[in-house]
Amino acid sequence: MTLRFHDSASAATRDFVPLKEGQVSLYYCGATVQGEPHIGHVRSALAFDQLTRWLQTSGYNVTVVRNVTDIDDKILVKAVENNEQWWALAYRFEQAFATAYESLGIQKPTYEPRATGHIPEMHALITQLIERDHAYPAVDDSGDVYFDVRSWPQYGSLTHQNIDDMQAAPDADPRGKRDPRDFALWKGHKDGDPETAKWESPWGAGRPGWHLECSAMVTKYLGTEFDIHGGGLDLRFPHHENEMAQSQAAGHGFANFWMHNGMVTYQGEKMSKSIGNTINPREMLELARPLVVRYYLGQAHYRSVLDYRPGSLTEASAAVERIETFMRAAHAGLNSTGELLLLHEPCDIRDLPGAFRAAMDDDLNIPAALAVLHETVRAGNTALAKGDTAATFEAFQSAMGMTDALGINPLDAQWQQGSGSEAELTALDVLVKAQLEARAQARAEKNWAESDRIRDLLAAAGVDVADSATGSTWSLKK
Ligand SMILES: [Zn+2]
Image (cartoon, rainbow, N blue to C red; front, side, top):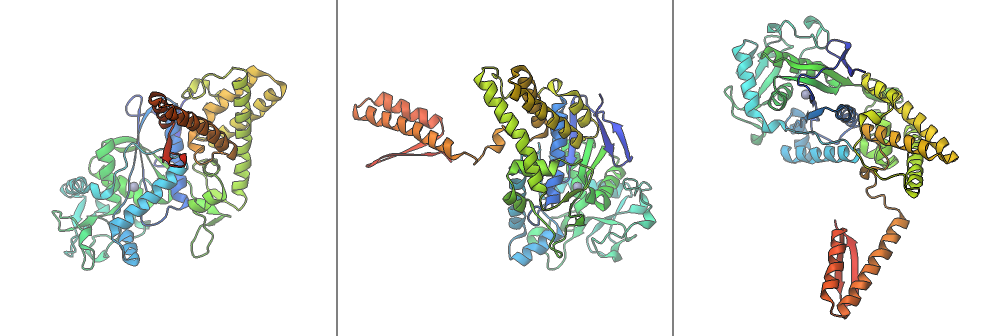
């Protein structure tokens, strides 16, 4: 079985061979933190989380870099509208993104660089491009620096476009450009821009262009050549075309594979605030629990369109319930027979069903992989009903491995947070109160050693005890 991915640059599905044996370097574009995350952002991060987990399950050590664009024209405009410092607004929304990612079990990248922390690296790249005659300072003294698209014959090769058919780059006053398609590497400071949003440079004070940020940060963290560059389909042009052009024009090999995830639509239409046919991650999490939202957003093939319809989350919830009910029943049954000793062993790829591995290796065919999972759950339920412990154990282990690989294991601690049932809380209260009574008794008998022992035991269990004249109360440590 060979791992194969669809490479958007060559428009072909190719065998994946990393540049360094056993290591994979992955960069995918993060958000411009100008507002609340929308569902497209989260689907993209989830697609690359699924990719990362499959590479890890396949035995690779994966270095993942996802940037934060924390300076941008849109951020500056929104900050004025909100009467807020641009950097405060950017950080506020950066945190909103982090919360959305975390609630859906999207693993943190290895590194998450911010654009504003990498200005010197961007200057170095611009200097290289000017020296190689692929960039020039604006002819109108605006302080802008542009990439010269006509100087790079391969411009357009990522998206298979002819330069003359391309749209102009609307990122600066075209009067300073040699060609309207030339895009800004550096944007000169303009009157009215906040003083805090400028950095000195050899071409005058200003701020970086968006496309340049990613190229500079990729090189810093992953080198001039790396395995996979990812992002949403909407970023292919102009963003990724420009990233590739400027990095390759600087002499970098850049990405070996380009992977793009599909968009999310609403009943077949593009989501649009003006039409009102939108749903954001926060609204989805009000309709369903996080595990269901993750399952829903991650169940389609990453390259296909994911079409949201009212009722989509109910269907996903039923699917998750089928998996969870079997796994909980099997877990309880196997525990009671003493069959289950090792619950949270890391998933070993060799224990996964061959059909599941083949599906995942085939450009992450998750719909086919989920079909294997559901088939395993059906077989497991049959085994449970028959009291066939060996077959139940096998199905359970398989389901554990597959759900772990996909990040949707219902027994994982990630999905238990805040979900303590009434019965569990009552049981905990009875047990803690029994310890508190024993401690009160020990204190009454001046048996300080015993009283301390009980306090330490409770502290180790994460229980805070507050003593007062009327007795002791407890709470879980925050
Ligand atoms: Zn990017």
